[in-house]
Length: 431
Image (cartoon, rainbow, N blue to C red):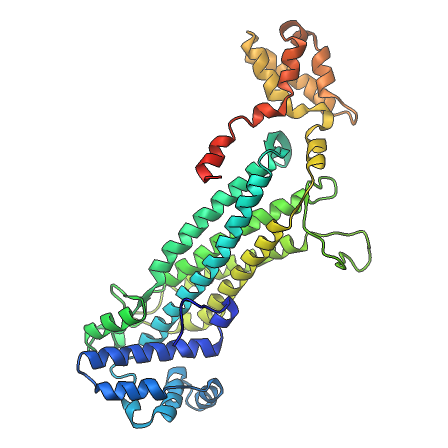
């Protein structure tokens, strides 16, 4: 049986062998429930548990003949079990096993992913604290805005991943459901108590009101949640890519010894990990659309969802797991360049301190319109000149000099003023 507390990595959870193992786990749980209620002999269940096995290759051989995966699986299992095998799958329909077993795969996948998400959270927490006071420029519309710290930027990423962790925990509860209710879900040939007992053995809850299948809104939520986590990782990756640009170079992906960035240009150090994460997020978003398309099945069931899920569920799970691992390594080994951050912040003589000068003038009694015009004039004169110096122009401006002392002007250009309330954010995050 599968030990949920020693889970293999994500790829192994979506192999044919693991899938068939979950099928067998469901079949045995149902047999145990049937025996507890007196529907089948207890000794038959013990024999089933002792002998039941399968050979993935043999299952494929049988399926090639019968064109039905569940019948092929049951035929192979009965080759191992013998006469007691007649009690396996008693009163069930294929979807009872397929959907309940799929729930086991989804739960195992979330558990595996949560471990990796926790590692990323810890990496972000460490770096947010490490760079708590590393001053950098904040940007809006891609344009310099006002000073902040790189740690504060990472604190925002941390908060987002904490929300993603909560989403995954909540999602785990919503997909951890099974159904052992027979064709169209009416329990016509199976006691509802069998479902309750079997699901309890599998650490699942019985679905509230299934048809012949578990409604696909649950599976759509699974892929949508994974797509949302992937979107967060993409946001982080895009920021790293932008900050690694040659003309910015405030951070950089770790470049391993022997790594090469270009077959033609030896100088290249490209943000390939971040770009890879960005591309994978696009794939998972596409899968979210396919998962939504799967919700509308005909009547009590069809199998139009099945072929889609064979692609999107393994793909989304394995891709997101890889993305989280990749981002964790990226964050842990991120190269941060505080001197470049300082250089970028002070270009054009500190135009990013314009609001502080504006507010200081307003406090001295100047109208906001007049103060804005004076400061904007100096800022644009500095901005449009490669060697422009906003600080120098402010110090020379007649309106400013008439209202602000040199000490008051210098205070406006002190980046520490922009950081004095950031402790509030760190206190909220517990760091």
